[in-house]
Length: 107
View 1 (cartoon, rainbow, N blue to C red):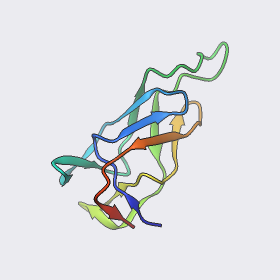
View 2: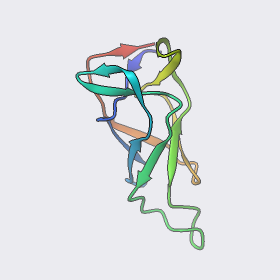
View 3: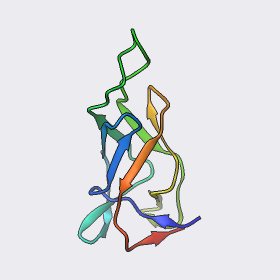
View 4: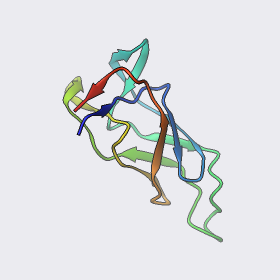
């Protein structure tokens, strides 16, 4: 299924509203001047409100997307898509894409 590509300027959050930031952007692909994000890139999560292990299993620390582009790649690696499922570690809750660039779609 096609979807918009994620960039380093995309707004991504954990299910508890913690802001997620891509660690490894695609060095060769830019969308509107902003680097695209590789599927293999981990996302760091800051500001997660889920309680620590004594009261829960949080907060969210990192996250990854599990499905990426098949036909569009950067240096042979797939890129992250906005509709693909993402998961936070250690909580297992989803990464949610709030906003991304609306011009480039990939499959």
